[in-house]
Image (cartoon, rainbow, N blue to C red; front, side, top):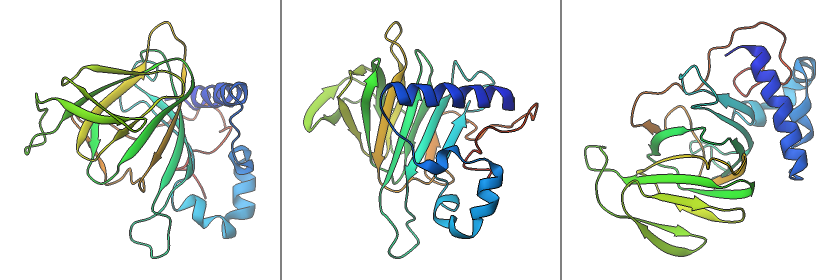
Length: 222
């Protein structure tokens, strides 16, 4: 992805968050020189990769398969006393796919916090980590709901679903309803070890530096 595209997407995200009255922490708007100046006291942010995150999943087409995220809090399973939970906010565009995957460890609540409708499709995983044809039962705002494998679950604003480990899922914004402000509350998030994509997918983009960064991504801190 070009840096100019990432910068434009971050500007759009700031406007979208503001329109929905979702406020980011002050350091979300730091420039590189701010991170350099404060690097001795921001280890809890940088080591856990809090902050801006953006991916096209290796597709080369962010609007077809991609996601913009901001990680607000996270923990570490191997650090005594660290948080054992995480929280993200995401922007999911109409028909913009987050590809099929599951997590070995992470249980997560996916929450429609506003905007359009979020479509989630789910499959149980087999012992060989293939897609099972069995019915899927999930908790939707504390109420169990059973769907056929791959059947669409549509979350309208205010609704949420709990996704347990080993449950394959993919999601996108429903066409004609606008982008979705999506929240995620989960166990500790570890993108380096805990994502199992059904088909190989890149997690962090290769960036073509055609201009300077607006806000550093969580993989770019000094």
